[in-house]
Length: 212
Figure 1: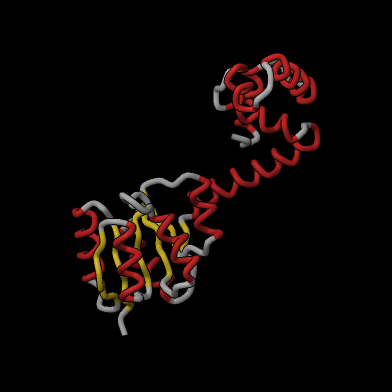
Figure 2: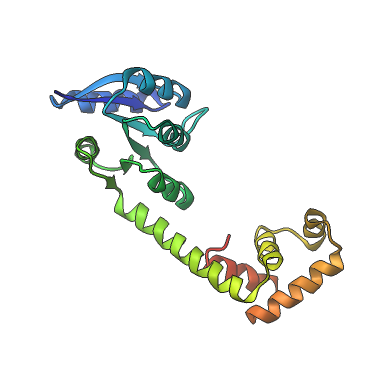
């Protein structure tokens, strides 16, 4: 029996190209084509394909959100995420939710077909460069957080992240419901504990340790 797949992409040209690509392979059958995340969910629940090839960026529910709902439903279809670019957080979330495959849109057509075949057989197919970068960021963040927590209080870690996003002292004070003077005291303590001299160095520290 052929591998039954659903295709989901909000760009008609991409969708047509994918359908044509898979139609050239006798062992793969495209059963439905979708253009939104909501439509994809309904199609998967109705048709119960072997594999769902889903674009990450779609109107309404994103590919990640489709994966999340299918994962929560405990449905059988394996999901292949097709993407031009994913954030490190999206990659980690997808892997944690048991994504079947992650393929870049710039990949060779045969790689996309091979990915679907591998995923249909129960294997996992992940773009190595994308996953390596995401895992490296995750490991640096975990190491950075562990290092920060050893010397900073929970409130100081929270304040560090706010500074890194560009918030000024008054904005931080308003968000934390404390005075600007208290914010300045926290910052002075943070600078001393981390051995840095000011906001610029603090921002660099956050980026180097992936705390943002």
